[in-house]
Amino acid sequence: MFNLFKKKSVAGEKITFKLSGLHCSSCAMSIDNALEEIPGVLETNTSFAKSETRVSFDPTKTNQEELKRAIQGAGYQVI
Image (tube, rainbow, N blue to C red):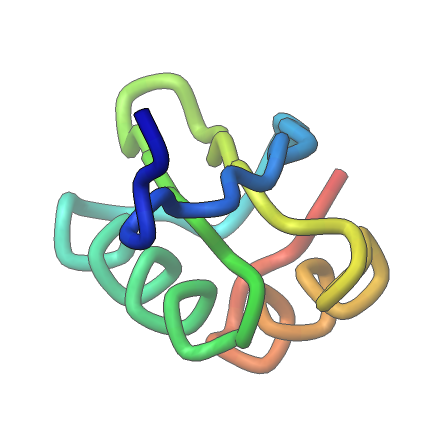
């Protein structure tokens, strides 16, 4: 059967960054918000308890360096 509405799926790349400078769960939300502003970011999950963020992204639209810059721009360090 022919489907006119079939979505083209993009396989996202995943990366985990270790972070420093997180003091509370609001810090984690700030990082997620900064990353979600980047075109091509598919999903973020920042853990205050683990001091890390996991990011799924479309490598045709963004890259690891741009993700790092967003984290640093929000006031946190990638270690």
